[in-house]
Length: 134
Image (cartoon, rainbow, N blue to C red; front, top):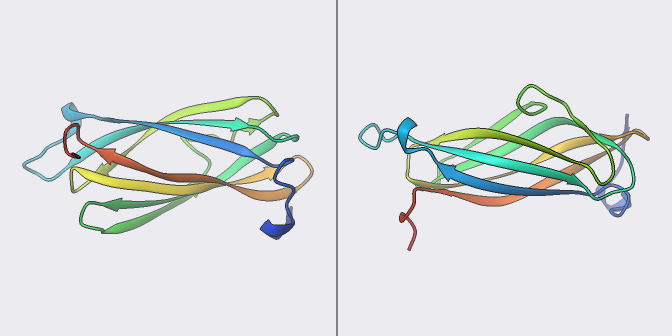
């Protein structure tokens, strides 16, 4: 594995686009128990020039009271997918909050077939019960 300073990485060669859709799961939530459950659906598109494998994930989950927790783990949903240029990988997972609104953000740590390590950033996205935000 070759660790490379982010400033030295050719971003055109190593580029993943991450998009997220979220949904509130009322059937699994318990408002009286302050438990709001959300699903998030991720699409990772390899816009780079080399195949890369997703090794680990890092999430920062923040609820509406600004309480944060971090999650680190290998792969996603039990997989460490390799994604070829122009290909995409989809998966769904979930998060539980103690408030009806929160955010998630993070990154996937990737390794390209040439041994270069890089991060695929996941911009902050909102988890919210419908009509909770004005």
